[in-house]
Length: 436
Image (tube, rainbow, N blue to C red; front, side, top):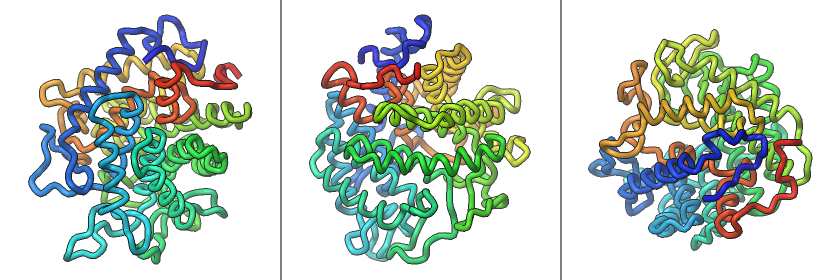
């Protein structure tokens, strides 16, 4: 891919501007795509083990499948052979066996004969990724993708969006009864990502405005009031649940305490949202950049090398003391992505240093050159571990980490790739938005 940086301020010496570094990123991304080819199963996609193989009796996972569909749809837009059929397979599985054809929405896993609703509750987290997958597949022209997007947006609008609160509701029973007494930052964070993608695909600014409302509540209000820490667990009446999952500190989606990796992930999304708003009409709230900077530094201070070894740890307690010292791969990927975004936005050398430091860490400890893919989790001594995540299920975070440094902050992922591949540049009335 050619030069796509949105900011003239990025130093000439930056890795982001160097051809060999760009080619290295592209090579790493294609290695990841090759590693995950065996994840396809009849009803979608399933998790791989450490060696890149399916376990006996592997079952389709809808969240993983939606993420795989998104990745392969974007890769299809780049013209990478073999990715189109995988994206089409993902769309077909989301329209077919993973969909609830009686009540609407999606199951976490296909129902079995013994279990009418095989996936249990209808989760906001999953539905955000279904929307993201459908929007990316629509951009790539995948068969059935627009129909999937229309269905997903109807469900999202009817059941999950809370207009009064300006956030997405968390979960329901399969028949949409029994709304969970919970409001969570994690599902809403990924909903912000999906909202920006939908706004670009449909041209409807409503979704971008909703992303602002979500960010304003969780970050500009709750996180800022907490000194740019990010408590993630709340009741439906917005009481912070400080003891939530105290007995499950290694929960993969809702761990006890706070997750520094999410501080940095939000930082990246805030900068993308700012760029999207500036690209749309030349205006964006100043707090988006201010909060992104504060969140990134708060997350790296709280989580990086806190126990003497490099790496961003999983969770901290309310005093910012380490809780779970293990280093998930996605935390490193999101911190690196945020550093790249801040470098593009500000041109400041501190973010260049973080960008290099994080890639050096990932290359040294996480890229598995013997078996392929990335090791999903390391312990406090940077040895392979499986306390939080087993095997190598996740392509989404690692692959996006190899792509986002090559792309501008706006438009969203699939739209940016399509414009670049088709036109060689992104038509943008506010191209130098980072200088605004």
